[in-house]
Length: 341
Image (cartoon, rainbow, N blue to C red; front, side, top):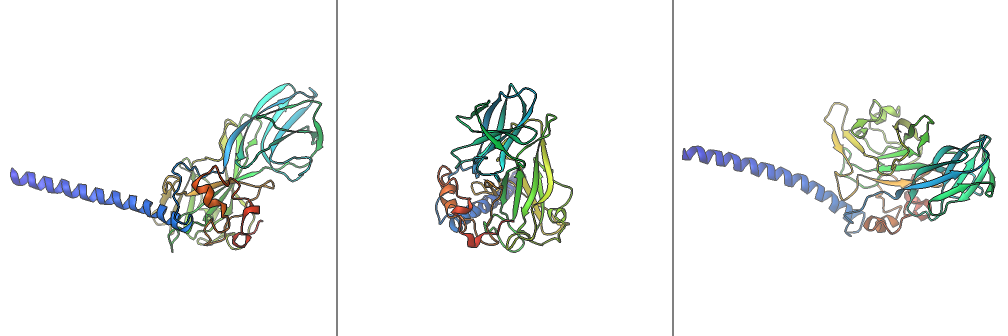
């Protein structure tokens, strides 16, 4: 009986030691990644454990239209004055009738101090007004504006994960996903369109939303390119390419915190490693930025960690209340940037 107890104790101890060792190895890997991020990107400084890694905030705008009752109107929310900046992309949109009040939800860049709204009829003619305290009312006292073309703005999810030859280099161009502002389908549903703006990995890469794969193929295949080929990380050779869409039953969606994940493998027939935003926490799998007023963002070139082109990233990574405009081209070192399309 004593021998049996000793044997069981030895097996249990061995199992506990193995499990503990595995646990330490996984934690050590995460710790190593955080240490590398701090050393290579943050010059050894500590990371705010509450950092969300998104540079925009979901914001609601209350809109009321009191205009001619025989017209249908489209209301758009802009970062800049639409009567001055005719190329400005909209952050959110709603279709409205006179006498109606709606809430428009947008991803507001954290650096933005002003927002504008435009209310246009079916001929593209209408009014604009600066938004005050999250609310705007359109009536006949507003300023005339005419716009024949109105375009969606974008939000960019910039991923960084290991490839076949190295650990993470923190250039955040392994996958640059372009997410459009919501399109009102006018049937009670709202759609965001997904496009790949850059692909800087030689790994087979699969994109997931809520654990459901986007598209039916590996991303290189969705882009009609060979496996292992990188795109738009040294020079621009391709326009952003549509790969799928997300449809929601409400406009009350936070486009800055969408639950994306990636699964990568060396080849199609090898096991896949899954990465989520929590995989490397508190260092990020991806950072989220808004497109500029023209809907664009320039990401780092291959191998250049994100603090090279964007020095303000370091301050923001430590405290996201500072350097909130770190990702704008005007604050960047253009030598390290892939050129805009």
